[in-house]
Image (cartoon, rainbow, N blue to C red; front, side, top):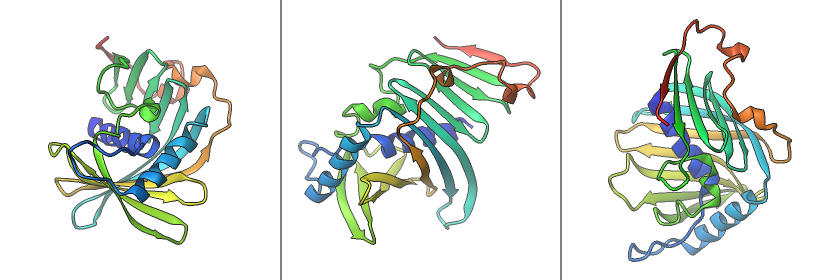
Length: 223
């Protein structure tokens, strides 16, 4: 569960936050890839809120499908919510609730904007501009494929492929290649960028009927 959520947050952060800059002393990123990613970043920053469906597909090194997760993501200012096949993350801008119904566990942490935690709202920062080199692999049929290589070789992944819709300047899919051989493909659909999202959407509510199946929750408060 925690690994799936960690990978998801990594992928969604790349999908939503990529902002291309050339890392000093580490070679040069492709100027054409930079133009594309800069345009994606600029476009996304115009959105006041975001609501989107997604599919997270997990494959092994032999291309065998190991599992599929579906869900939704909501964002508004510093707030976000991620629903992954019934397992949820809420952030009201101050606190983060990670809900695992199968384990009957709720973990609560304090959101610290100054730490290195990867969160969806990192799209308004330069979080990735120092971590990747970029190159444009292909530009055909309205889709631009960009390859990202992490500078830090201790990362759990060695390559990320980002697919950009040339007309809308939005990222439609991201594929993360893990060093262990697994591949995680995140595909976006039905993105809405002008929908009004109530603040209550980002706050965990035990009275929500979707949690009724759990008789007793264990709370792990790490704040």
